[in-house]
Image: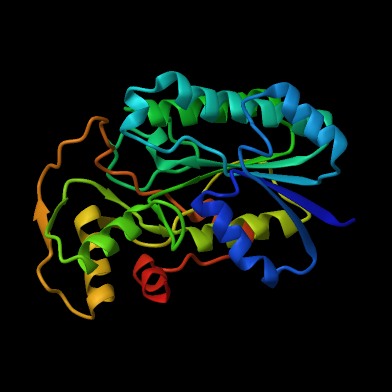
Length: 280
């Protein structure tokens, strides 16, 4: 059976990364939808689309990802991250579609001292994390054939992300102060896109929640310093450490994810984040 994949939120960085690697998967068929083509928050539109268009898999990359703005725009964050996920879960059940949904390390509170597993109790400390957890719960309550894939600190050559912001500032010779307080794992969104397509190609799989990030851990300062060194070929002193950088939304101080489950299921070995950055 031909696998026909619909990618929602296709103009975001993950959607662009999926597009970027599709030539490596000639056996898969892709349709890319932005908000204008499909508003995931409108259930009637969602059901109408999947009634009219044959599909075997949905990659839900549609999300409200502005962590600080979510504190002021709670209704919008939950509309997209919870209701949008719920609507796609409903469609996936009605039309027998496998749903792959992207979630985040920000569902955790950051109080751990070792990588979070899929069974660790989620306890978000900001609105963005709470809205993404609500989306997970909606899918779990409604869905049947679903993969919820939590990831962390995504960056890529596309869209708006930390990597591009730091790279631009460095190229413009702007000095930056970057926090050393938070620890996580920078993850190249191209690697995440490949994992999603590996899941789609796997015939026998256990549905549920999985974690995926690149390997290792870093502070935001470590990541920014590495970007400076890769951009300029050496450290020029534009990136400087600061203990605590004030933000509107609280961030988890520690949000490293355990890859143990997905490594066994997909037989993969996540790339060290430093190598993934070097490749980019």
